[in-house]
Length: 175
Ligand SMILES: [Zn+2]
Image (cartoon, rainbow, N blue to C red):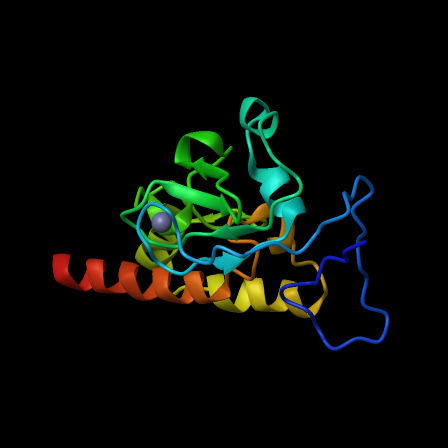
């Protein structure tokens, strides 16, 4: 049975691991690591993350025996692909994917609900962004939920830092 790693784990001896209650035994097969659509190498992703992001109709087609990866290319429609041909696109997931959707209301942090427009609004109002420090403090307190709520299945902090930088540049270019 596979345990989920806490993607934003804080050093702790009592680190919690969730177990997949419906785990299917996996046999190691030849592993596809490149996205079948764009050819970029995909990141490993936990099956539970894939399941939690899929719309019900897509979830019904999931082959739990495959090992899935996340495609982070911004110009590629594929979100997850399996090592035996399974693939899910942007239309199959519940939420817009940060890397693939540049909309202002797309989540940057999926569990504390930061969007590009929220970052923009804060910087416009106060001149600075508290997004990174706020999320960091939640991570330190062990509240991170990226492993299940973020389509990439890992910590959002890098994306948040990048988004804050982007927003600042956008504001400067308008000034
Ligand atoms: Zn791709």
